[in-house]
Image 1 (spheres, one colour):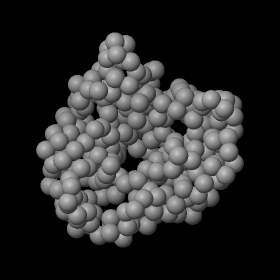
Image 2: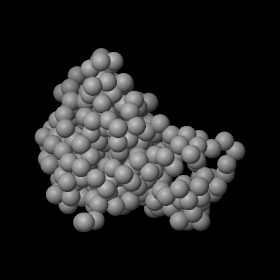
Image 3: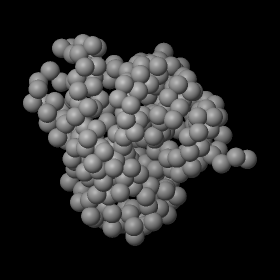
Image 4: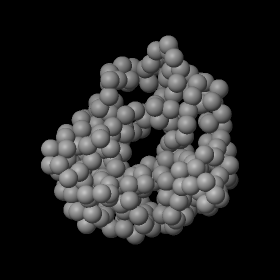
Length: 271
């Protein structure tokens, strides 16, 4: 059997709920139950030096950082100061990523909604990314764009065009398998985005639940129990030349719950 394209499994630190545990104890627990890495939000109250020390002690990698400001201060916001603060937050996230040795910073580039047309969101997202790329180059951290039901970059062809518009090695895509299943098929996104994919998020989705109960209900399935064709996703990732992180992003909890999620992640990556 060939090597799985999802060669290592991480999770989001925000999924962890272990009251009273120190960062070192938490990271040690994650390593014990089989995670290879953990992604943190930034800017945040976490001390980067403490994160690095805890990760090294546990033998965990720190593959990426999630920008914590792209929803509160979107790059597409009507208010210029809100957009400027969004840039400052993203720069801080890039610098935190560099400090902890992470390779990517996840960025939602904007959102379409009341007061923000699609064309306006595109122009502002382009301006925002252009402002951030010098900082990505300076820090050595790549910006990974993600589609998160933000009514923007709704097709893989459009996503590829957005990335290619910059022609910059510091920019790529963070492919969330569950997020794109509402309107399309993950394998199509993998086929089109190919080498632009820097990271992969793992969550499942049920269109049956979506049709019966509403769009958000589609996420209320366990990893591996929805309608994602994980065997097809793995085959598409392999054909695209992807070999790297799969980061779980589902409702978390304590040790038992996180261990169950890790087992599920192992199952789908071997399909």
